[in-house]
Every structure is written in structure tokens, then in C-alpha cells.
Image (cartoon, rainbow, N blue to C red; front, side, top):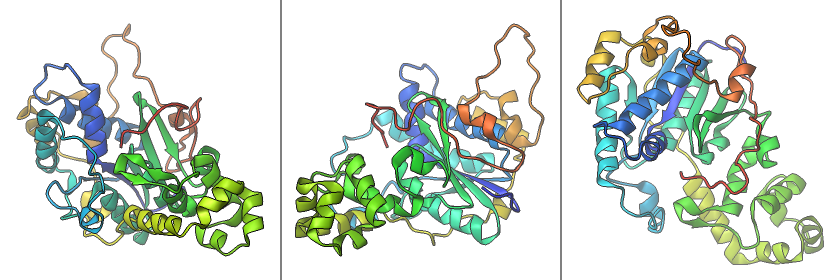
Length: 339
């Protein structure tokens, strides 16, 4: 990403709190998922040094997408009661800490990411969107990158930009919605086009550029690109309906009211954030330095090993972010995305 007027870090609060909750299974702390969410925020801020921070959450009551398509996410089991409790507390806690926080009526954290990236771009800022949801790859451009949290936590995170995305999925950011619409998203209960997995979807887009362009070619050309069975399935009128539905539901709002990056600037007030966290039994101190304008703490115990860095951290230069890959491809073969 280019060096611009500022860097906005935007967090998908729901996906990160879910991951923190499941990683804390068995913890005796009163709010381990909340602690984990703050930990994600602090570690990302320490590595990226953003000028401002915004966190978005799904609306817990209404869903415009479910009104459009009642089957959307309908297969998901009820959340554990303690996860629901911490999800309810999280926006209040972050606001008490001084963090710009958005819970958009009827919309989701993904829409907050998209709208915040648009707001940053309009001001000449860059943005990094921190999430475990692959849908955010569609938002990548010259000013927007995605910090994807995968199984294994922050240390296994990968910073994805417009240059690195094709190496991971075989498509460009502007093609990602078509790619996802063809492949489908089981986590959202959105089946894809029959015979189209990730590899076939990427191949079709590599050859034709877009789904719409592929629908215009003759059958023989389509068969040569993706094979007879996939071509037959693709030309079925039902497939057009599937792609149209998935595109519509996967599209993110870019126009929701979100805090201006200027109003969400760091640093936070150290005493305010400490007080807010302690009310939930969370005792964090030196690890908050990146959020409160301090310096990185010096290890008091020389024998203590340093906190590990994610693989992409070594690729960063001051005020410039470069997409990178860790040792394995993303996602890891056999690894399933939770959100």
C-alpha cells in the first residue's frame, strides 16, 4: 500500500471475539474472549502502528440479508451463552476504552469494514482490515489490505494485499466476489454452483475475467476452459440464480455511517482504558503501550523469550505495508475457515 496521510486499522469484532472465545476454552477468567479481543487489537497496533482504530460488530437483532434470503446463516447452531454475553459486552467495553465502535442496525461487521475503508480512502488514508473472514478480500485495493487471522492466532496471521492475493487464490481483488459466488460459502449457508470449487472458479475467471463475460462465450470455448461437466453446470439457468443471489448477499455496504478516521485517532487514555478493562476483570498493563502512545516495554526478565512476530511483520517498512505470505499457503490444505 502507498504511504498516505494516515493508517486506519479496522477490526471485525465478531470474528475476532469468536476466535478468542474458542481459543480460551477452559479459562477461569471472567471474560477471556474480551481479553483476547483487546489482545488482538494491541498486538496489531504494535506491529502496524496505526493512526486510528475502528471496531465493527454484527447487529445482534436484525439482518437485512436474512430478510432478503431467510436461509442466510440459518444453519448455525445457537451460540454458547457465555459467548453471547461477551459479544453483548464488547461494544460497550470498547467505547468505554475510547475506541471508535460501530454496531450497524441490520448490517454486519463486514459492512463496517467496507464503509470504514471507503471513508479512509476518501481522506487519502490507507487501511488494514483485521478479520478471519475471507469476504474482506473483495475490499482490497491500492489503499486497503487485509490482516487475516487464521487458526493458530495472531502469530499465524497473514497480511494480504493486491499483489499477494492472486498467489493465494488465483484471482484479483476485483474478481473475488465472483470467485466466492461461484464457489459458495458454507459458513453462511450459501451453496455455490455445482462442479465449481475454488480451482475451477479461479480458472474460469483467469480465462474470461468475470462471470458475466463467461456467460457470453460459446459452449465450446467454455468447455475448453473448465471442462464439460463444469461448463454444463455453469450454463444451467439455476446457476445464474445462484450466482445472482450470492453476489447480492456477499456485497458489502460502503456507505454506512462510521467514525471518521480523524475522530478515531490514537492514542487512547491509559487510565481510562485500564479502568474500563478492570471492570470486566481484565488486567492488562504494559501490553497496551501501542494503544496509549507509549514505548515498547523493556523485558524485566532477561530470560523470558520475546513475543513471537507474525511472518508478515518482517516485511513492513515505516508507513508502508507490503502483502506477504507465511510459510504455508492460505488457507492451509484441509483447514476450514470458521467465519
